[in-house]
Length: 297
Ligand code: NAD
Image 1: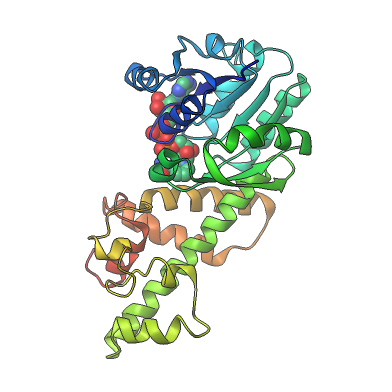
Image 2 (image 1 turned 90 degrees about the vertical axis):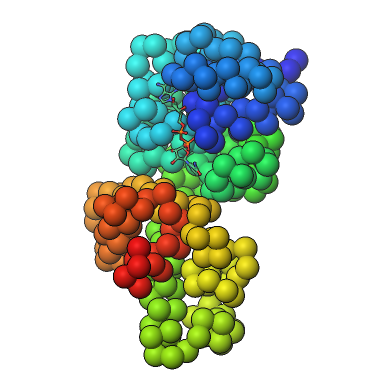
């Protein structure tokens, strides 16, 4: 029999993800607080879910793609929600990017009621969600991961098991913290080189073949010129918006405080992206820190 999916949260990411599951031939019931979002999912081949309870009651697998931890806690743990209304034995997959503590609390609550659950946040934006090429970082028991994998493969390309519950979120925030730090460092280096009379292309040619090499430089160069398809050559249109980087850095630093892990550059990176937000430039690509550092934001 065909796997029945209940999909909750049909926004910029969840909409195209649910559409890809339907396109792959799965029986998808989809719901959102926004009627327009549900209408679009129905056009893409999903069945309308009137409520969360109705969406999950016959589902073999529930997938959620919600804004933040508070939404995930509510949708799973309140009486109207997933845990109270799902079919016994169902598998839950939350692909939202949320705080580690919320991910672990919701998985513990689901597990206590006999459900298998994985956290499976994604890397890759709306284009990857639409193209079915997302990367999933999955936390949860091996059995939950093995059951989730065939469903995730219909929405993504690379599926990693990161370990126990919450470890998908850990992998995501640690990766993005490193990305934020490396991007800011790359911007500083290109700006200083230029101030000292070294042009961006020449510095790129040298540093990308030397020990300063990193993804922020070679694949996403924040100085216009060297990497033709980078947002720096398209007026810093995202790409990956500064506001989304800020969200992930806040999650990383919040987790670092709780774990008593020192993240001095993570904290500084959050402060720098908060300046972009304060300047109402959070919709600019995260490599737009280049302009902030140039005093030209
Ligand atoms: P979004 O705001 O576009 O979509 C979230 C959807 O959840 C909205 O349609 C909203 O109506 C719905 N929702 C909220 N509460 C609900 C409830 N109680 N019941 C039903 N629906 C509810 O956000 P998005 O861009 O799709 O992002 C979703 C998650 O993915 C976030 O955690 C985000 O950080 C993460 N993410 C986003 C991107 C990106 O490029 N947009 C990339 C990677 C990860």
